[in-house]
Amino acid sequence: MKKDLEDHAARFDEKASEYDESKSDEYRACANLVIEHAAPESTDVVLDLGTGTGAIALPLSEDAERVVGRDISEGMMDEAERKADDEGLATVEFDYGTFREPEYDGQVDVVTSNFAMHHLSDDEKREAIETIADLEPRRFVLGDVMFFGEPNPDEPFYDPTVDDPATVGTLADAFTDAGFSLTAVERVHDQVGVLVAERTPTAAEATDASAETDPSTGEEDG
Image (cartoon, rainbow, N blue to C red):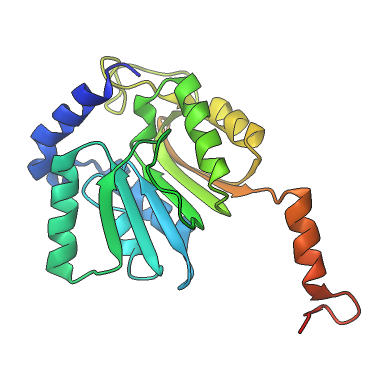
């Protein structure tokens, strides 16, 4: 991480009120793809990490049973809460949490994040993905600054003073090592994309699922 958490939080606190208006077309396209691929069911709990002003959390709260947003910036979350109140969204909540310490131990079905993980170093990203895997979501949708080719620091999505994007290959390896399988890769820009990762069921989970189904009919027992 190029800066510590306090520095990042303070930086985003300062820009919170103008954050939504400052975003690029690529950011908005990325957010739309994250929402599309997250596709929560009505009984799902979504954990949105680096939730910011709620660009992902608020739309998903209309479909999911519950959305839990986590961020390090109080200013950004204040904006998200204001928008949730304005829209009358009661199924979304916001509180402090990081990628490696989400401060949440309840049910998680889908994890989302948009334009936030690139502030972590590659090793920290790997730790974050392992932490998320331990929550046992069936899907993790990551929209972010990421390199599809050779990184170009002159591009607007990469500020070497605060950003530390990974290559798509590095992220793919981290997902695979944590027990996920990539099921979709969306390229928005040479340095912006969306990865969709599905968690590979463990042997025990596969056995449990099989036991719940009558092998002769393919129907659930009971």
